Image (cartoon, rainbow, N blue to C red):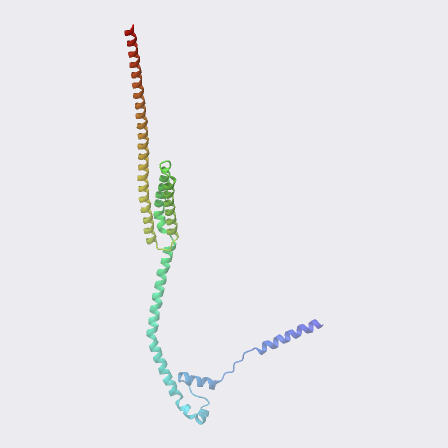
Amino acid sequence: MRKTIFTVSILLFSMSGANAQTMTYNHDASKQAQIEVMEVGAGSLTPELYYKVTHHNYWEGAKATTSVKNTLRLAANAASIPQVEYADSIQADLEGRAKIETANIADRQIDLAWVSEGNKIENRLLGFKNNINALSGKTGSDEITAWRELGQMYDFAIKVTRNAYMPNSERQKQYMAIYDEIVKSNDNLLLRVRYLTAKNQADHLIQSMSRFRHRVSENATAGYNRWRDASLQGSSGNNTNNNN
């Protein structure tokens, strides 16, 4: 029972609160007429007798004052027309610029230059790295390390260019510059490999000639010693015969 009474009390309280918040509107024709006269100069003040008796001057000049207000409104409207046209021009320029920037963003985010240049650059760089291996056994480890670091520098340059925010026309220029540098370095590397190869061959030839000359000298010395020994033996035999 108590629970039922409590529930009914809550419902009654909620209904009374809802009624307390209800908005009401009571139309006042005289206030509306006064606002129309004040703002647009139309209509008439009501009740007319009241305004004639108690506010006669206002009743006579209200519309005149509103006429001035309307004149100012028309002047302001006429003055705002060029501003509207100027604003429309600015909006059109901004919209056009936005379209251009949208195209620029798409051009910078999609790397079309790598599609046309990437395979050529990668093949040339791979050939350069393979040619570095030809230096093994021909030069010191410091020089080989320097050439390999140069290859790593090209890898980094390619990575930075691919991740850069730039138009494809500029990106392609950077790719071509990297490609030209790789070609130039590869040509210098091949010249260095050929030089070291020729140098090593010349060194081997000189060593071989040196060993050959050493053998010739040894053979000549041995032949001279044999001739000298034979001469000494012959002289000893002749002296023995003479004594007999």
